[in-house]
Length: 80
Image 1 (spheres, rainbow, N blue to C red):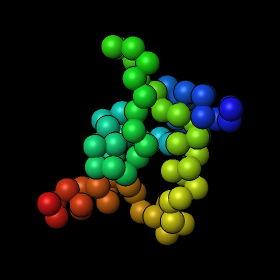
Image 2 (image 1 turned 90 degrees about the vertical axis):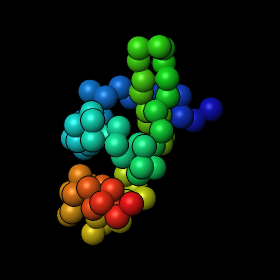
Image 3 (image 1 turned 45 degrees about the vertical axis):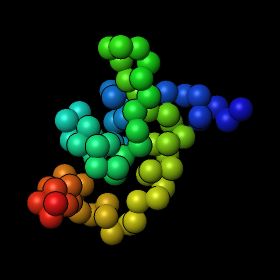
Image 4 (image 1 turned 120 degrees about the horizontal axis):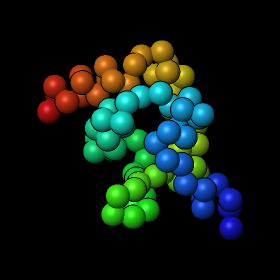
């Protein structure tokens, strides 16, 4: 089995992968389908599969890395 698939990252560990957004912003991105879904670890804990986070980072267009995701989600929320 792929080790990345079974490795779960908690919110604090996302920073080590270059994801510096706030918890509330990441939750909005998850709801908008713009960030990998969370994995429920218990009734009080969630995390993300490392493989999903790495795929999300790799799939992001280079030009999007220069525009804040927060700005883009606000724009897309205004469009709906």
